[in-house]
Amino acid sequence: MPLKRGKDYFYTENSGLQNQSVLYVQHGLKGEKKLVLDPNTLSTDGTVALGPWNVTENGKLVAYAVAAAGSDWEEIRVRDVEKAKDLPDTLKWVKFSGISWTRDNKGFFYSRFAEPTGGNAMLAKNEGQKLYYHRVGDPQAKDQLILERPDHPRWNINAAVSDDGEYVIIYVVDGTNPNNRIYFIDLGNPGKPKLDNPLVTLIDDAESENRVIDNAGDVFFLQTNLDAPLGRVVQVDINKPAKKYWRTLIAEGADKMEDVELIGGHFVVSTLKDAHSVLALYGLRGGLTQSIKLPGIGSVAAISGRPDEWEMFYAYVSYLQPASIYRFDIEKRTQQTFREAKLPVDSTGYETKQIFASSKDGTKIPIFVTSKRGLTLDGSHPTILYAYGGFDINMTPAFSPSMLQWVSMGGVFAVAVIRGGGEYGRAWHEAGMLAKKQNVFDDFIAAGEYLISQKYTSSKKLAIRGGSNG
Image (tube, rainbow, N blue to C red; front, side, top):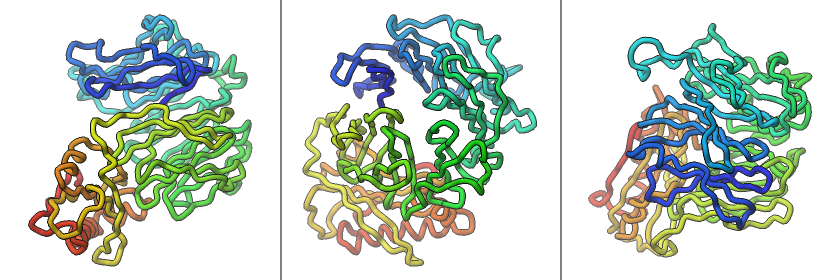
């Protein structure tokens, strides 16, 4: 996904034969790409990976994290974009951290742990994460501590600067629990941010998942599942942050709300309808203004853009199309391809359909079926049925070269969306765990039986597959 700074677009790209994706910048939509950073040159065996990265508002510096040999430990460095060379800045003992610059282009927020003592750093507990601010040119020892909570050593603390540069939003989660707290600091003038201003509480309980979409002055827009398991958008006046004053802008609907961004004066909302993506524009008062036509039954993997610009990008992937980037003009309501992964085969001879089985208790179970177009339903086709069903994880359409090879040979590839995942929200997840785990097996069996009854395959030609929880 491109990150826009002025008229420059920063993005990563992989030829398909590289160990690590390469960071480029191009000036304008049709400009020539210029190398910013090639992680493949950072080690002889290609095992140094590029982690989170972010660019200053003026587009002159990129702060980026690198990890060696698959470790979660990362090192943050700062690079001059024009010269494609690193500055002396090196930040260590970083793990599970974002990178967010202040609008003065002089420094960024990041999270780190204390340097492990004694023995193998890989064995150190992930406890006591702290939020710091680093000023470019300073040694790490001079970084300013913003927040620590020694009374809650399992808390993970991260930060993001608002688009207008006036606030730093601080997110706190307890271990792997998705529910979170939110605090913020009013930085004042974005050109001269005041890091010592008091920490203000926005949400101080972990009863729900919450994210600040953006703000308009003192008004924050939040995506939350509080009192709305499938998600909603609310407006919060930071002068009266109590939940009783929250105002719903986009109410909870029938489909799970995945992502919301504020772009071009609109809320861009990605939802899951029967485990595949739907993309739509809403006005700032919450009314639906347009549905965006996607290329097919697929997944919107990411959305990017700025509140004051009409330009929006989204990443789309399906069973028959590798991840591609589309540019949508919110003002003109037009769409074009920004970057597209080219297939060495013609996929128009194949198709993905969605069918629905009925589980033992009558629950509707979606199944994605990918095969040759116009498949004769005579029960003769070798079929692979896959499912996951756990940990609130979505099984949405994704591209796989091996799957496409299987289909090209006459096989059928089916993915059952079973309970335990997160495709229909919290209740769907909880209906497939602990004492209700049997539902997961019943759903999967029902999917297999339905494929046979509809003559996609027969019991002798049906194979089942799963990985990890699957």
